[in-house]
Amino acid sequence: MAEDKKIQEDKDFRYLVRIVNTDLDGNKQIAAALRRIKGVSYSFANSICVLSGIDRQRKTGYLNDDEVKRLESNIRNSVSVLPSWMLNRRKDAEDGVDKHLLTTDLDYAIENDIKLMKKIRSYKGIRHGMAAPVRGQRTRSNFRRNKGKVMGVVKSKVGGKTG
Image (cartoon, rainbow, N blue to C red):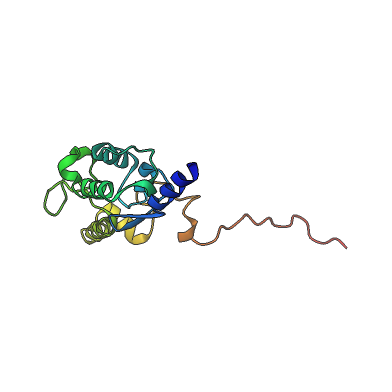
């Protein structure tokens, strides 16, 4: 009888669950698997699970179609459901609206932000153009990929050959 139950559970189990055009691992817990979606953080994933009424520790592979649809709709409509401080594009520069971008939309927005910074020649834009660190890090010992290989100290010989 226990074997029948295990076979039944295996029939319901899916190794890949597709949410927001991203394949999620069915063996991981839901909160951890949602973080594989670009634009979904730890707190965002936990709040989406709470809003959807799904236990965060449940395996992703055991979600049924209705729960997957609920999760996806809550992720896509997070602007209306979550507080604005949890979104990743508050007061967008183009239209001034709060947004939460995911996957390729987030990549595209970041790319456009960097292009705008370069165009207006802001300090951050100039640093991006030079491939230098943007956020004030020191460059003396780090970021060697931009400077070339590390050069060590060459010791000169003190005495010549005596012979």
